[in-house]
Image (cartoon, rainbow, N blue to C red; front, side, top):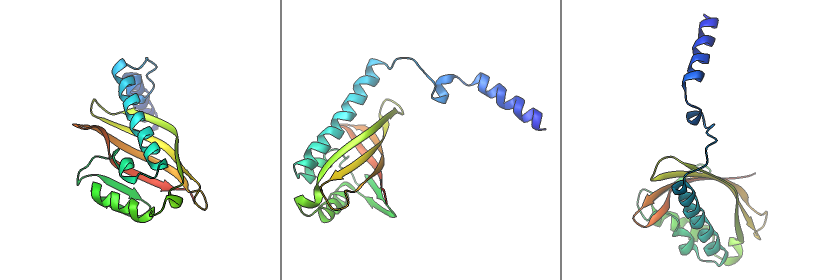
Length: 156
């Protein structure tokens, strides 16, 4: 039985294209490069807005819908306005906002209208310099690429 399972597994590996396993070494298409550059520009605009104390400008990176989701710790916040209100309450002074940087960004295009971004965030300035990781789901909307789902964690 064990030998048969191994044979089936080896056969599947031989049949499944390498691209399905994330092993595709082909150069990205021009469209993919443009999409990643566009999404990166959204993140850079968010960081710039945050660093000038503009929370509403930062929120321009999110889809302005009731379906936008932000998860942090054990809390789920739904809706663009509710996420904005959460940020305004948590960062009610410029000092609390600090300077935001994103790093270690990894982009995965899931189709022509959806992508994920995995990365690190860091706030320099506030006590304890909060930092952590995030996973974002971006969707192409009529307003451009916007975050529809943000799952952010803080390092302890």
